[in-house]
Length: 296
Image (cartoon, rainbow, N blue to C red):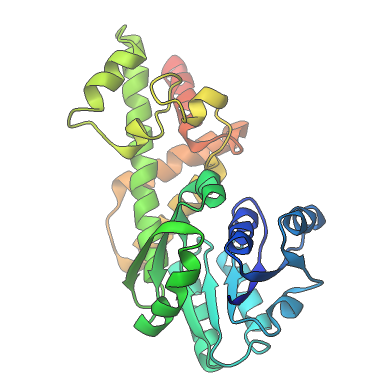
């Protein structure tokens, strides 16, 4: 089994590292937050005093961090310490330019590198059912696959460095927009006297079907596992959805792509977050839309 360093032990990284331990890997880990280090230690992660200490002797390094600037900073610190030929994987969701900059840092010191952002939320992280969208060379992807398979159920090679991040932000732009459209339909149904279940039964088997409806329905009842049944506790927080939508709009502006629905979704989630609900699940946007309907 491989020796793996895991840097970033938060809501996603902590369970992912724990699954690597369960798979039999020797995992050393680090996070800036003491409570997260303590929780990881309970799961069998060998917690160390810093990121550089974690990567000493590691065959594989995994980072799960908040933003591109953090990834680039950590990779600059740890890449020179890692042994030549080691594999470094970033599973954060960051901008494409930062992902490509991280790949270049790895290349300069002879490391294999993969950007591998995830879909599946905290539930998927705990259950090891995440989807990984990967960017990197064929050799790097082949090296990463056995490790990623211990944390997820679908591993997709999307292309060269940065392609994983491109796939992630495109996917989440779809998700943000379809969740808003789904929530709007339920708000309209309520105004028209149509029950939640009736709309679900029709749309879930008709052309209105989507993941936002059938797996993550924004109203209580039709889908038992939806955060709507748990007072919109995340899940995938609205703050994170806004982050991803803003990344999509940054990428669209740089690429010269027209994304009016993505831009509208970003504006709506910005307003939802500003209303004090950034910690709610992103499907809770339906409550914001109900309020907008009352005041509109």
